[in-house]
Image 1 (cartoon, rainbow, N blue to C red):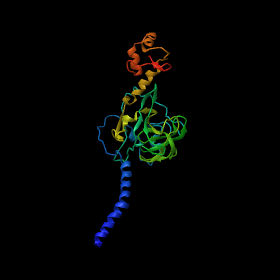
Image 2: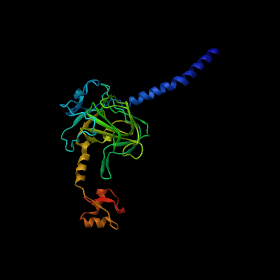
Image 3: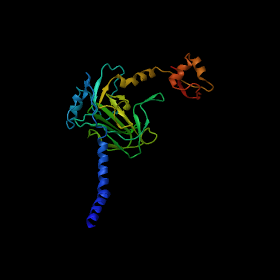
Image 4: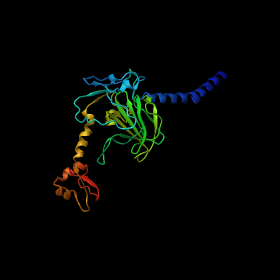
Length: 299
């Protein structure tokens, strides 16, 4: 009986104290190893950006010397001068995740998307917004070095990290920043806490991915439903910058303000355009009523 009682007590201690600790450790390990499975793809004759980078612990000059990819490591200007890749003639290979080199991707925050990359009220939203609560931990996505930590009027508290794979990621509307400029960071490191600073309506993380200053739709790279990369390798082409052509067209667009009593038909007649063209440009359904004072696109 005493032996059985001792066994019972031992099992009780395991379940009460050790099991929760093991469970927490396993959850943390699972988070940091999220999406680390290797995907094998056929290599093409693309430019291999990763060959410019060496050990994570080498100096910054090794990663981003002037004769490789970026010309500077500015700690003040949030956006590196944007390059127009809308007619990019080649394909650039960017290694996002390499199991052999222990270089992984970690999702910045596991939450639902509240706003997508793309046109918003005739202006471009260059990132993906992720729902979170103020104070939630925001993690670094890839290995790299912190380039920007500052308070911006539009972004609020913002962090920009330049990664060893040649990309930059931006994390905005933060409540607290936990890293410093020129600090080396690893994928999975907690770099900040989420918040609602800057031009923001409600707590969320505004997350951007950029290459040589040019934004890339994060959803072209990341599966936000499964919190993992679509692929270990990114074959960067003009497809990823197709929005730049749309922006160039918008520069030539013409908008008019709707006056009281005007209809789509009367506006179309006045400006010599087809009604169906106005429907298409403004993405509105047939029969939609116009609101006086609103702007609509006619060209």
